[in-house]
Length: 215
Ligand SMILES: NC(=O)c1ccc[n+]([C@@H]2O[C@H](COP(=O)([O-])OP(=O)(O)OC[C@H]3O[C@@H](n4cnc5c(N)ncnc54)[C@H](OP(=O)(O)O)[C@@H]3O)[C@@H](O)[C@H]2O)c1
Image (cartoon, rainbow, N blue to C red):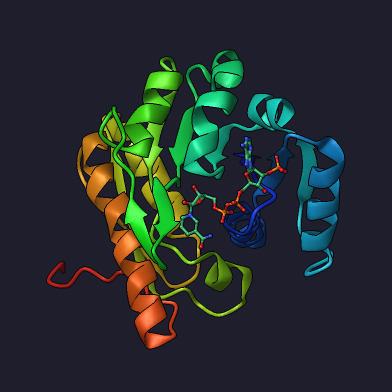
């Protein structure tokens, strides 16, 4: 599958692209500047010559990708997504976005009028099939080569899209995809990342999420 990344030049987009390219997908790193995307793709390909990773402007990554993953900061959504709405109509558009700000030395969850960043993405991309996923995965772990050892809670109102993203998540070594219910539940998943940031600071760790009790 060809996976497009909107805002893919940051650590989260690069980390997911690295893992999905290792799993055999073609990844298109999107950026506001195509040259920056090319450089990011070159850097990832240097980690493995056989990796199929390209760089492109966000609009081209959105148009060329069969499935799209949005990895911009929360503050960028309203300025970035409307121009991509036509290109993303009918496609799965995954939100990895955590509405978070750093203040007084700690991380805080921002209030989102739509409820969650994933729901805001759906409002900005009315014809896309928005799925919330990967918000709790550490980019630094994704950029490494060890199994990630974490659960990815996947939330969506489109059942088929949710199942597809759960299967995709499990192509990252050490990851289990879990059905987290409706897209509105993304609010809780996004909030957990704020908690993880605090735990990481206290324990000098890169903590992840594992849900227990599921056979
Ligand atoms: N980092 C993590 O460990 C982690 C973990 C879980 C979830 N997340 C979530 O994943 C998303 C990406 O995280 P990140 O750390 O990779 O973010 P980031 O490095 O801050 O930003 C990613 C990319 O977004 C683009 N961007 C930045 N500001 C923009 C703006 N105003 N308008 C349009 N595009 C803009 C930039 O790409 P160009 O300059 O190339 O356009 C940038 O390289 C965030 O929403 C974050 O909450 C991150």
